[in-house]
Amino acid sequence: MYSNVCQCNFSDIRSLMGKKEFQKAYDLLQKISDKCSEWYYLTGLSAMKIGYYDEGEEYITKAATMEPTNEEYSHAFNQYNQYRNDYNQNSYNYNRRNRNDVNGCCCCCGDDCCDTLCQLWCADQCCECCGGDFISCC
Image 1 (cartoon, rainbow, N blue to C red):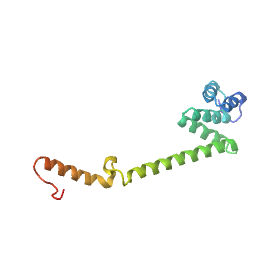
Image 2: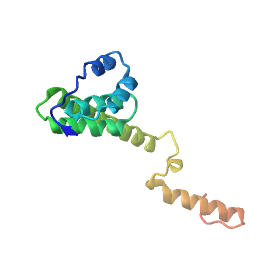
Image 3: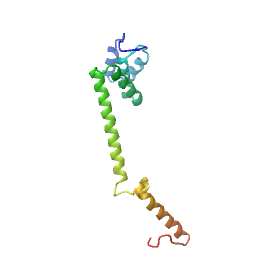
Image 4: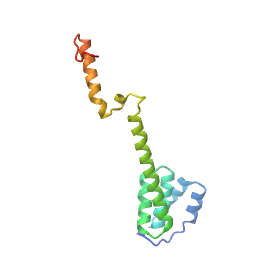
């Protein structure tokens, strides 16, 4: 059953989460069949804290959608989105730095700018091994 009105008292769940016992809270939430926005919110938070990020995102999004005026749900939703966006940006910047690192060899990381040069160098080396010379200056 799904609704915004829940007959459940989630104080025990919130207490467990306050003690950082997220797995216990998650397990107890899984036994509840009356799923309301608070259930989705608490399940989403506990899921994320134990590493179920996709499930957690889905549940927090659902809770925020079911009760868009609930500041607690909206805050968690916005906080997760900010975290995800920061992570994606940091990951992009980290990988971009590694691809453009002048101290490293760009050929080994598959940059498009070096692929052609690497192929030419390899072709030259193969030719030289067989007694030819594909690129005379190398």
